[in-house]
Amino acid sequence: MKHRVRAIIEKDGSLLFIKRVKKAGTHWVFPGGGVEAGENHEQALIRECKEELGVDVSIGELVFENVFEQVDHGTQKEFFYVCKIIGGELGTGEGLEFQQNSHYEGTHELEWIKISELKNFNIKPAGIKSFFNRINFL
Image (cartoon, rainbow, N blue to C red; front, side):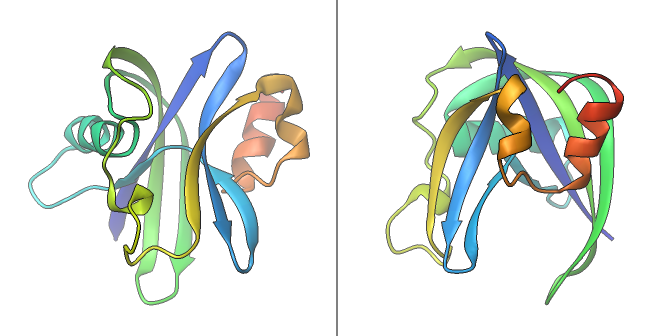
């Protein structure tokens, strides 16, 4: 089973998301991606945050897990960690999803969303919103 890691980054009452605009619709995801061979979760999350966001992060608590099926990629498991930006410059990431003419469909943009407004957004995975509600995060 493929493992993926996601960073939950909070600042001033907002959470950092990647807004994905595709033909099928728009949704928001936490930054992160796949764990590569030889990496542990911490190494993968540090790499992904540097690639996608341009920042260095410290990794905190694992707060949520999600299992899903993806066409062409099979069963995957996501691990969501609370992270803190400790260096770098947000918005300077050079991940393929932010480059023109990459194999990624649509556009990908960084966006801060106020925690109090999360219920109004199509956040993926959907189960993360229920989790936030249970812990009175929303």
